[in-house]
Image (cartoon, rainbow, N blue to C red):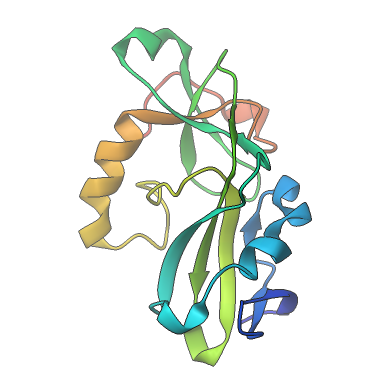
Length: 167
């Protein structure tokens, strides 16, 4: 674990940390502390994806379902600080949501946030370096029918935008 920084605490006061490897969408910083306080860590497995309903609109969900009718608006690009490509859709509005999704893990008796974003949980992308073989099929099925909204998920490497499918 590299340079852990406490970002909040669970309902029972257990601290939760981020590291330089955490993928935190900047917009969630205003509510992640409140969301963590709503989670009872005593019932969590050592790896968990949590959808926390904040009871009010807190952000915009940037992952949407797609269909064959959207094919002309689908592009692929690398997001900042990622080595692999993500599937994006152009010309689609983000959806207001009361949910914040937080992926947590507890290696070495310390709770870490791997990622946090607005909306409900999505499977890892097929090219995620931490994906397990058992997760790959679910991932492919999901991501072939869903995409991130271009311009809503943070910076991308503009030079990598392509219409050629990457997985």
